[in-house]
Length: 46
Image (cartoon, rainbow, N blue to C red):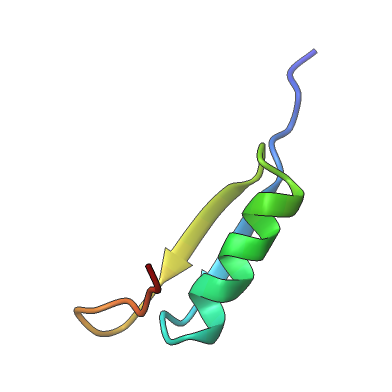
């Protein structure tokens, strides 16, 4: 039986979207994260 992979879709690449995606990734490393951003840049912190 195939295991269904959990997926998180984040809409928006301002400060909130990448922060939520990073937290979700820390909580569940097996999570597939897809992020959509309308503009050419995504906000991120080093």
